[in-house]
Image 1 (spheres, rainbow, N blue to C red):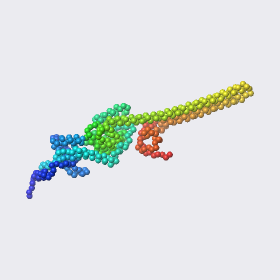
Image 2: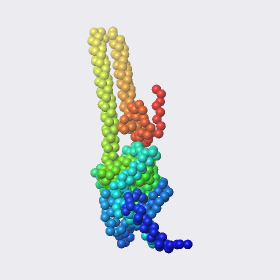
Image 3: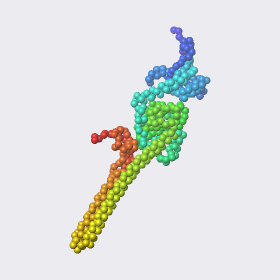
Image 4: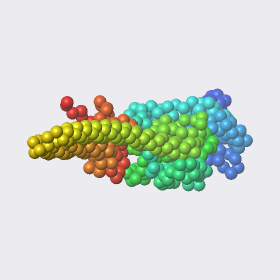
Length: 436
């Protein structure tokens, strides 16, 4: 039987491939593994998948003489480096070595294809979050009126975190905020997992915080890739309290920015937003107290005018009674001078009667006016907010408006309740209008 050696067979295969195949092909594949040798050569394992199943696999090489130029052009165009998990369009020639077998020699990589592929994957993640029904969830959570307990996800050594803390601690109003740092990696392959882990730790004690801030300083566009992952986007979107991002890029909007309750440009801008939010609330509170003071002053002035009116009436009544008594007294003196012996007893009776009438009417008038003054005083005290609050009542407003002035109170609305000792903020979980 005729036979050939393995070496001779591999030579036949190599020659057949050289005679049959084109000089090079443009191929789409995913980088499964990649390493750059110390001599500058780049070795890859390329795969094609159907779902999670690998349906094709081969080795590929980029020689050191080409790798520097190819990788530089790729990162300059895409803003990221070649790495495992990336799908690329490349030009390669097929090589078959009698000792090392089949492999591809990559001559060039089309960076524009990877840009399109990255945009496609990014859009797929956005579409997936929308299909999951979570894309808008965090943005629909109301921002707290006075955010004071802040959970911060950042790198402790990052300049952006330092800027954020300096802006908070040196605010012009002297506000003191309770800030808790949850350290995390903010770039690199493990950054997304690290940030998600911090979110989970915050969620385990969620009642201790008003909102979450995710901040980092500026950097290359490549550094933002971790903020475009599905896992991070999904966790931020479904987080039970508002999430604010300040990632440090004005032009780029990551998926994390899109699903967060509020996106700001820089860590400093996040700090400014928090301080301004508290300042706005304080201003509205001052306006409410000013309105209450105006109402009280008006009530006091009105009551004072009524007291003056009744006092004048009482004085005029007394003057009238006194004048009448004087006239009767003068008449009595005249009658006495004319015939005091015959009418003395009669006029004494009349004088006594007049005296009793004068005293009775005066006392009656004084008692009536005193009752009216006491009633006015009770009315004044009844509208005094301090007495109302001391009796266990409270003042409740929504967005600065009296709650009784609203025809409808939406579920989920936050209301401010002022009692004698506390200012309470609560959320409406059920609202049912009573029948009139």
